[in-house]
Length: 103
Image (cartoon, rainbow, N blue to C red; front, side, top):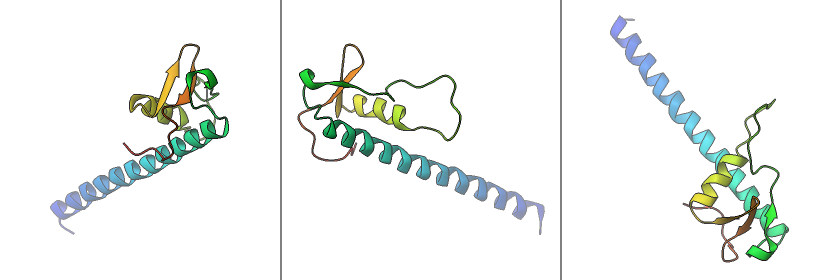
């Protein structure tokens, strides 16, 4: 196999691996966001008076095991105003959200 074809194949494989990794991370982030919304619905946190603290609201400095996407998903849900943050790190769903996260 010529050197240029081998280099091109390596570049194509690297791009494919990058795209696959981003797709997998996106799916895991969506699954984490759906979990957070479902958790807040179960806790009936629909307004500031019923806001609850979430144990995965803050990331940990020392973690063993697989990556936990819940803290990142929570930050995105707050950014897109699906979930609101109150003082004291308490969260609630905005306007009784019935759909899943869909930015």
